[in-house]
Image 1 (cartoon, one colour):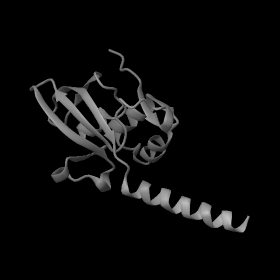
Image 2: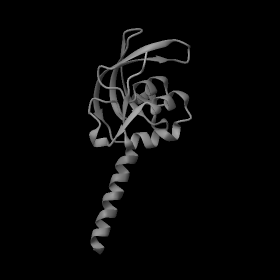
Image 3: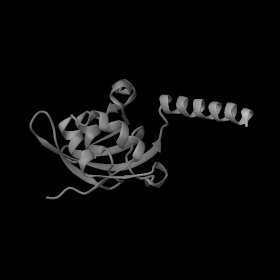
Image 4: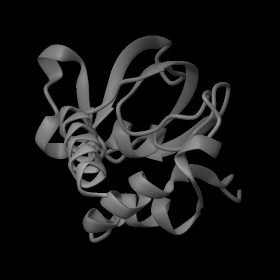
Length: 142
């Protein structure tokens, strides 16, 4: 069975490429359709998306936020993109399912039920603030 293409923003693809040595994530990146962030449909799982997914192997529904490894905190439902569930959900659309291998040797079918929101990362928010400040400073000299 051929896997469907997944959708990634240019920013997510660039940052995730640093982790391409992770076999499963590297495979996902190799089949990605990369586009500007403003063209990624809102129903696609991106970095910092809050997602409700269904584990079709056991009927469990969970809500998680897809995070970079340094931001992962299971206490707050933030899972790493390098985790089996995180790598599986990345780039999928609402209603899309994927069969995904887990460390215990079993394959599980995960289905994206809802992509609720895109949560800006603290580092991204800080970068935007710095760029806005820099732009204002440059405007003062023009």
